[in-house]
Length: 406
Ligand SMILES: [Zn+2]
Image (cartoon, rainbow, N blue to C red):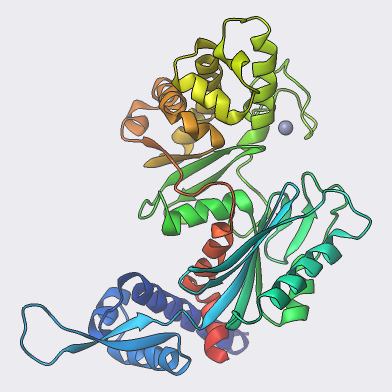
């Protein structure tokens, strides 16, 4: 048994080491082999071997580094080579599909937004494939070597096997094996992830939570959910589960939710619910500025910032409801940082203090006193979410090994 499991074990070590070395070169490059050996805690001979393979595969390149203080020969540094490697980053949301080509540095080559009707005679899988095929045809002139496909969407997903079990908005989606279909069509690995989890990864890799080990990211949009990074790792990364704070009951007598329960946070704090509540309360408050323009999230936030009492009360109400659940999460995860991703961030000056006040009052003082509440760097659109999946697959070695093997 030992002999049988050994090759797999060695492959796993090689994959992890290669990923760690690539990560260092990507984040610190140009960096010398000696520094790599020290930072990766690998023997110089191992670094030489890993780097040689990466050079041969054109994943890294050599460059000269001149130490400012020294007059000697410049040292040889290593940098990642990214431009000749592309991937397709795909995002499906309510009625829309975003498609982008990015290079391995995550730089955008081209991005498009297309309509994906919620109901159609053609099956969901066929429609997605058709969009991808047409996108590749339109942009074949720009396409360098395709390395992978990354897809992010809301729903119940089996990330391991690339299966979408169910999706909100798209009722005909039932156990769609999107990963397998695309892998057999293109021959490249396909990475699938829930969009809130992927957005949490994107902020950790490129955005507002870079460098933080423990983060809670809350999304308040059409859906309400969260991503948690604990000790530098995404919670539930490899499974279909999500941090479902949106379906925590905050009002036992509240509205019925699509999940089957009553008064879930999502039925109170989602964009649609908040606008609905505003409509109702406007009838009792004829002096509110909100009557002056058609009611949208933008107008609600603007009115709140201009001091309209009703608008302010509605936004801080969102903060209080979300804050109450966050206070419990703070006691569970003791994060350094809380990120809020929401169109209500337009009134961050009202929303964030309401959230912070709740956390301070309702969680352990030792935990809550150092927490900062901030907005996400990225918005809930575009294809940076997929970029995080590909970066992660390079850093953990999974995709890197495939590229090294050609
Ligand atoms: Zn619910």
